[in-house]
Length: 332
Image (cartoon, rainbow, N blue to C red; front, side, top):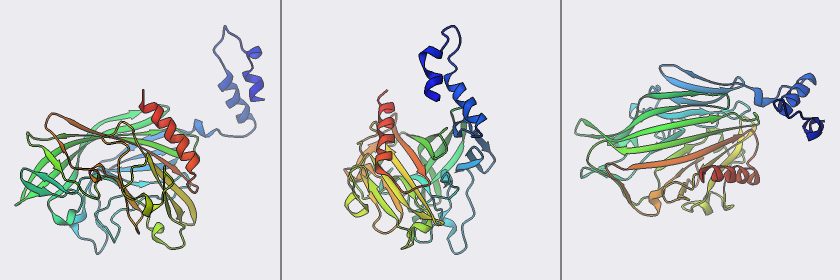
C-alpha cells in the first residue's frame, strides 16, 4: 500500500510530495505510532545534561563530580564524562567507579603515559595524583528535530607540588541522532589544544585515549559477554590491532545488550590501535600503541567516534552497515 501511494501516477507535480506524510497517516490510522515521530529532548541541570528519545533515556553527561561509592577513595572523583548510556530497553550499558578500576568512568577520555614541562603526568590513573580531567563549562546547546547535542569544555590538569596547571583545553561536541527507536546512535568529536606554549608528549604505551567501561553485569560468567571487532577478532586476538570498530555484547539485567564504537577514518593514525582488556568489559582507542606523538602549541588534536547501542546481541553485519554509512559521511 505504501508503494501504491508513492507510485508516480498518484503524485501531483503542482503539490508538495506527500508520500511520506501519507504513509505516516496510514499507519497512524491503523493504530501504530512511528518511532521516528518520537521527540528528541535535551534537559540541562547544574549537575548534568540528559538526552531522551520518545521519553526513553539515551545518555547523561556529567558536569559536576559525583559522590564516590562507599569504600572508594575521593581521589577517583572527576567530571566531564558520560554516564549512564542506556539501551533502548532501558538498561544502563556503562559502569562508573567500578570497584576493580575506580578510575574508569563509563565513557571518558584520558591520556596515560605523558610528559609535560619535564614531568610525568598521568591523567588516567587518578590515584597517582599527577593529573585529572575537569568539566569547565557548556559552550552551546543544539536542539533540532532530527538531532540534539551539546558542546562542552574540559581541561586536562597537571598536579605537582600542590599546584594545578592546565595542560590541554578540550571541547566535546556530542550529537544524538533521531533513530527508529530500536537502536540509539550518537557521535562525539573531541578537539584538544595546548593550554600553554608547552607541548604535551605522549609516550608509546599500551593504553590511553577515548575509553569505554561496560556494565558490571558483563563481568558475570553467565552474561555471555563478548568482544568482536570489524576484523572478526575477540578480546584476546583483537588487543592492539587496528579495527574500524569494536563491539561489546552480553546480558544486562537478563536482557541482551550491545554497544559498538566506530573510529572515524579521519582520526590520527586511523584505524587506531585498541586496548581490549583480557577480563574486564573495557577497551579504548589508543593511538600511542603504535608510537609516541606530541600535541604541539597552536595545533589541534581531533578525534571523532560514533556509538551504536542495541537491545540485542551484537550483529557484525548490522554494525558494518552502520560503519559504512559513517565512513561515507566522514568522506564528505
